[in-house]
Length: 80
Image (cartoon, rainbow, N blue to C red; front, side, top):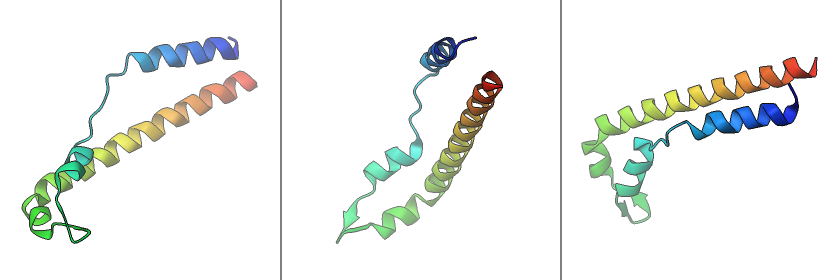
């Protein structure tokens, strides 16, 4: 399989992946800033949500790294 075919397969696969809206981004956009710092009281009130959002972001990041690693292995197999 040629590199162009590999790229086309990856692009087609990526088109099928639904968009992901990470909770941590949404939380970051709603936390008020007071005197240049995040509002501590709001952070305390949302501590459970923030923890969940951080866990979600870490899992998503790990899955992304796994996908990149898999693509790298495919590339190296084609180079051999």
